[in-house]
Length: 493
Image: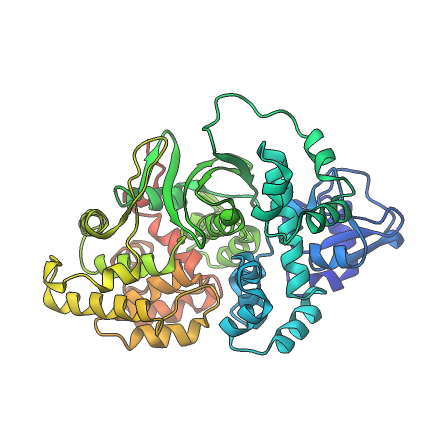
């Protein structure tokens, strides 16, 4: 699959006619006769090719006057994989829009974070996505509104403002325009909620492109879970979330065709951001078929991919938190890193209440960590310097690890910090920045796997050999790690 796929009419027509779910989110099909837009895998009889036209985003379809299909619900497609595998302006803008920046700070706020003028951003988004930032944010608000209408008993006025609309009238007009139903009609079509749900919790399904192997994804999150902030319970990963308007607790359960997500939020305006961050942590917008096909071209990796395809890169919901934990994990075991992090959480984290028990704190903010006494840290002096330098730069904003960051520039800033070598920078690039091509040739687990598989085991030689795996070396890392019996590679029993 490729950039601008919606312009390849013949390929799009074939995907629609074969109802190929792999293309969901890559493009949208608008039907000229019905004025409805669908995902490629829509279960209805495909329209005639001459009645199809293709758009790169749901927002572009809506701008052109098409309504969302009631059968395939194109607004619930997985997101385009492009925004997480690219680091250019459009990709960074899309990651920020998904994180709710336009709703919170407007288009000027989006432009300021990216370091470009609003005009430049408008032009580039229109050229590639057929819609500007306001239209893209509006489409996202409509999706959030639909989710709240269908999964909560909240009054419509509360839903309107929680979804980011400035008025109830705009909310009503947008829902009617996008879904061809009023908010109350949308709710009437939804089956009644089942009993036994946690009070105040939102329950939803997070879609993904198959295949998805949950073993290393949830295994990694569970094995490295910091007590009080994260836990594995009853087949689900749970953790606390620091969000723009408040905090939340999420429970994520792997299922064959979706990830079950249960969210408890202190402020419903954080719903869109919470979903976006959970999807990013679980790498749910990846294109596993394209990734695995590339890695299979290497005869050493092919058997590993064939044995358990669809591995994702376990990422994070909080980039600053992950960077701090990466420093705590330097040259110590997974268990020791958890112990260090748990001490910080108990001493400096913000307490919260978990309706289900088990979780007790938000991970400490950079500001809280920058204010602590360095002498209280039970670690060697050199690593203490690394830690304090990192948190002070995160706290004062001179180091930004957010989704809008330029990966190359951020790597250079990290490498300039004391105590930051290639391993620390690359693991942050892979799991916090989201670089799909980050590689860890100095990692002990990778070197051990390379030796067992007959790959070069020195960092320079292994890096040269891994050139054939680009731009998916972060996924190759997951397959190489999986050759070991470490707990990160297995779902907890």
